[in-house]
Amino acid sequence: MLSVSDTETIILNLVQPLNHQRDTEVVDLLSALGRILAAPVTSQLDFPHWDNSAMDGYAVRYQDVQNCSAAQPAVLEIIEEIPAGYQPQFMIQPGQAARIFTGAVMPKGADTVVMQENTHGQENGILILAAPKPQEFVRHKGSFYQAGTQLLPAGIVLNAPEIAVLAAAQCTQVSVYRRPRVAIFSTGDELVMPEQTLQAGQIVDSNQYALAALVRQSGAEPLLLGIVKDDPITLEQTIAHALANADIVISSGGVSVGDYDYVDKILGLLGAKMHIRAAAMRPGKPLTMATFPHHDVADGENNQHSTLYFGLPGNPAAALVTFWRFVQPAIEKLSGLSGGGKVEFVQVRSHDELRSDGKRETYVWGKLQLINGVYEFHKAGGSHSSGNLINLAQTNALAVLPLGTTLIDATEPVQVLQIGKPATMMPVCLAT
Ligand code: AMP
Ligand code: MG
Image (tube, rainbow, N blue to C red):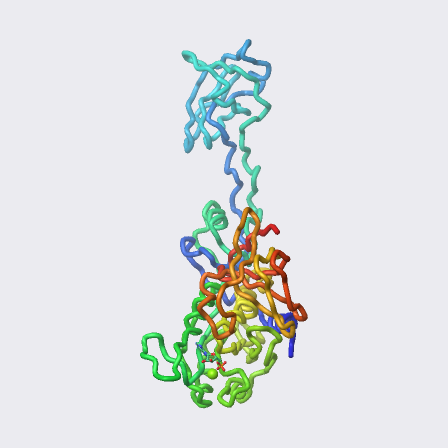
């Protein structure tokens, strides 16, 4: 059986990111939150756009005030008032100053701003009570960035600061990667929709809902195909439909070794290339990963693409854990995110004793909590059976016991994977 890390490597090597020319769309800046930039953005402007004042005060010539002090103030004539947003009308001559406000354009002739706290007003003039430094409180044109500078690289997530940068650069239409399409369906004769009355032996299809939410959180668009009976013909039709309409197909259930587990067989019939049939992890041992290679001729290019198929285990906790561990990174890489696919663990202190049989890499769900300024992992109470979904609620992390580790004692360090956060969110920086 493949190790978790080999499984991860195989999967990520099979993922081809979306094409930065063909797989893009243009969105309005107000709709750009959380999207991934498809092309770098270069500034057309100098920042600041012109020399301006960083303070409320007086625009002066440095040489007029360089030797002044409270005992021997410089006396200057005020020739103009320049609020932010207005063009100065006059040039500052020796012995003159202009009243100026933060963000206002510096008048010609002036090279320095004296903050108003270091001045004293008098009729028709101003006393400068302290010598400024040369060019003090002047923000020079182009001193932050010049026209032609790259402001944002491709492949980044657009959050508030990036959106502000785009707005300031007058980019109101942004080229972003399209959202990957992810088809989702559940398999099992025992499954019913949540609104149906349960008959003996039936169970609600919770995986469809969980996976739809996870796909959306990963920045992709879910395409829900419902519940499919354990029937080879229906299964084949559903998989064929999914392949024709999605970049990634996720099914849950039917990948184990039971008599009614048909998924792998049908994938074979449909010409899939099988890469993974099981991973040495708990929960989540039955796990299928296959690809359907196809050619895509567009713009004169002949591109080899693969639709990725993930057959996740049916057990609800196993379906979620395998999604977080393998599918989310694959979606991230596919989506054009630069560095997408990297799974990052953080080391924290475990509040509880954690156990495993050591035979498979074990994932224990729980909560990262900040206790007296230090992050700790608190194991969820209740059963950790892969069939128990209930205590996954309100967790935000998976602690990992590597192969061969049977015990992590309370207060010992443990590697933790954060879950439930948007894929595009930066991981928090944790102290141990
Ligand atoms: P399977 O992987 O098909 O053998 O299913 C393993 C277990 O997970 C069985 O107990 C199923 O009833 C349960 N299960 C399968 N699919 C789902 C689903 N979509 N939602 C909730 N439980 C499921
Ligand atoms: Mg089943």
